Length: 120
Image 1 (spheres, rainbow, N blue to C red):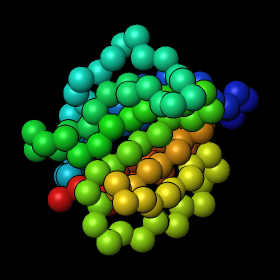
Image 2 (spheres, rainbow, N blue to C red; image 1 turned 90 degrees about the horizontal axis):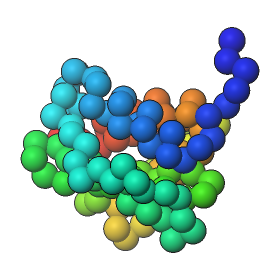
Image 3 (cartoon, rainbow, N blue to C red; image 1 turned 90 degrees about the vertical axis):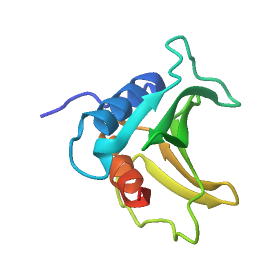
Image 4 (cartoon, one colour; image 1 turned 45 degrees about the vertical axis):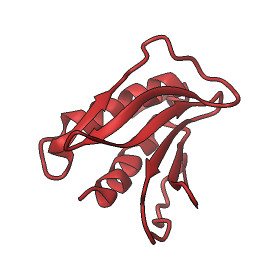
């Protein structure tokens, strides 16, 4: 059993990148992590760690905040925020798209499921 909870935003972003690029099933097989900044550090205004692309087109980005990693998905039209009961995952909609706040490593799988549901 896991005794430690991963809460470091940079580590959460790394786990997320591994999950997004390591799955060979559609539609995630077309996902790439691009423009990664290895030196990105969390900041109150959010520091871009990398962009997420699908089929060669940027579909979102991952930002680092002191308390969480945030996945910002662009152009998610008319989508209701998915109901995900995973602890450590908050989902918000805005005019700019969908925002997932991932504050634990355990919540990464839920975030990946939501990203998967937004891809063509």
